[in-house]
Length: 217
Image (tube, rainbow, N blue to C red):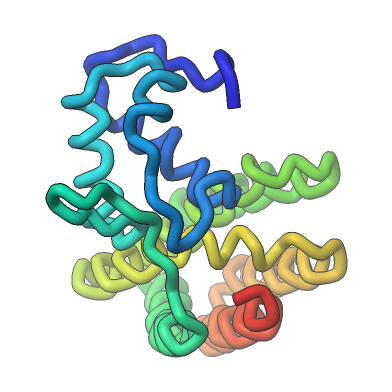
């Protein structure tokens, strides 16, 4: 860590939340570890109030456990937690894929394909964090294109809690290449507006995600 972490706009707790979230996703703050508030407040160059607000945001996302008077810790998911969330997410994203093919406008589909192309550019240059963030956005936007608010909310809730898990799923080169191939399948089905095929591609991707991450838990 170092001065590169410094936050320039001290009034925005969401900037602090974003920075701490990245530290959790990348594993700098390890699952189950206690968050050293004083150290991070100094490193990030912020006051205690926005930092505490950021922790509450991350707690609401399921990434942090705030313990009054004991300090906050990074939530550690069990393999059972991860499997159950991926199982449900697979069914949600299957439905999202089917509905998106029925309900999305041509412009919305084009925007999602453009996002996919930017992801592929990051893959080619091996920029892992930008790729990861666009990947998260891809799945979130596909859920939005279902035009079903309940589905979108449930997908967002589970995806937020799995941020670190989804990141480690791309650690090994063959795992990352496999995930990219999955996304190519998704986009082909989306271009054809083949709902059943896109739904199957989404569900299959989530099943493979479990295989990619289970040995790291």
